[in-house]
Length: 254
Length: 280
Image (cartoon, rainbow over all chains, first blue to last red; front, side, top):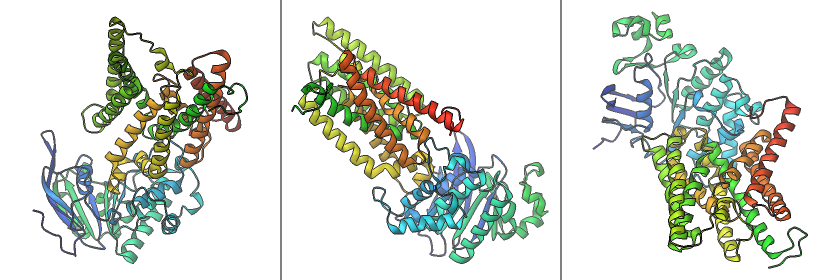
């Protein structure tokens, strides 16, 4: 039986393992996130980051171990809106004309029954989220007409619109222009500081936010490191990661 | 029922066909919009082929072919959805399996019925026929139409969100599997409703072509849905009129009108924007 998470934990991974066919891609990984923490989960390509992310979100079932989100199993949340998820920008490939506002408004479906019409509260939340990512003027544009960085911000707004307590972002700064990276950093810092939102970044490069993190978790199938970024800089390659695999920002910190 | 409508809709049988045609012309693109959104444009075609097997089975067993088509199409739609999401078969392979299985099954059953001495005329089911619409059909198609409109009114936001990214939709707590299954069942039901007028082989075109036209000019999901519906209704009405005037199979004329609208919209759009067709 899963133990109930203490109120000081928003997410706990208990000894997670997962294998595709015979190959173990996530091996006995355990950690937890406290409210208001700003954490990065990093690792080289093929380190099991994406698989771990999918386990945390409840999109995959672990072979062993379990995940607790706000004390419940992922996918069984009474209020799914407490979890915000920003997928990789590449997953956004609308087949039909879709406005930025329509993308963001979709995020409110985690806060109301799917068959209900949006209320004034929903519409206000959409405008608020568009403002937070500086996309108000582009609300009626088609998402396909936006730059990569603007599309990324639209996806962040779709997660923020539900006012989540935990925000999980998958490779949010990959291939994004400097202006969008700066806006992205500012809005994350604001979320963490003003709203006590817990943020988990899953990335192989951290760019602008590296200096603001509370904790870094380094993954390479197993959990290689879990602690403040300063400690990681001191240990560098002794973590058992080949130098050529190290994320770019990690090299900068050495 | 005989309303004072102008030629070519002056006769009662044409008015029955017109009402059914308008309902089908609206409902096929309503459902089709979400199929296109989910990259499942060929879903209607695959299920149409299955419905043909159902029609042939009904003829063989001397049961109303519409009901056997409905049963086979709904079961097939759910099976395709299951294979697509849980099986190891990819979406288009799952469709191909049903595509060919359905048409082969239909051919075998129809030939068996012919051997048994049953008079088999499958052409009206394949390509539609104005003369076969009965007042009873009107009630059935009307009920199906009301169900589809109600479903779209309630579920369109959730379906659009799933269409953008189904994994995010799952994380949001949307019942993705149930909503996908609902769409699959509505696809099957629409196809059967359209059988009398458009025929099982062409109904998929009426699900997809109006959407193709709409997305060229629409500036939002909502506009796409509305424009596709309007285009579907216009195609049906003009197509039925032409079918009466020249004594043609209505399914073919309706789909040709829909294709012509797509061609005109593409050319006009290309002239005003200089963009290639389908560019977005």
